[in-house]
Picture 1 (cartoon, rainbow, N blue to C red):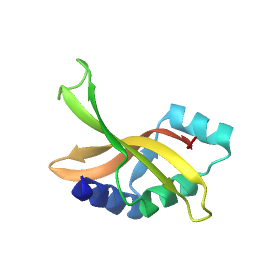
Picture 2 (cartoon, one colour):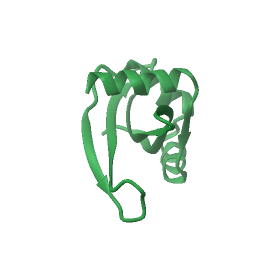
Picture 3 (cartoon, one colour):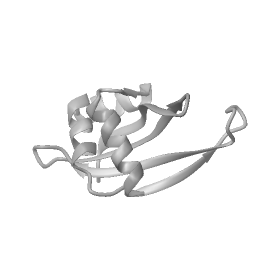
Picture 4 (cartoon, helix red, strand yellow):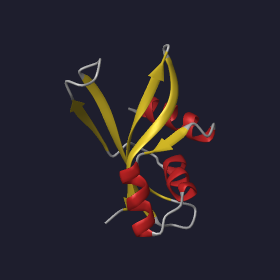
Length: 103
């Protein structure tokens, strides 16, 4: 999974990421900014967990969600869950489904 983390970090560094409405609400409740979340992903040393998500509404039946727990540059532990979105065989952006303070 180290390769996946490198790919996620590269799209984050390129500024190619987006937040779901749920993630934005969680961030607002916890007083987090987009930079807090991005910094925590860049600081991550490993993916905490990989989840398989299935939905009949998608063209691909199986997609993977990646849970990352790491600190931002100020030491605040952040929990994020997202997926790499690929278009035409390339990592296009990282879509964050959840972003909040880690417990």
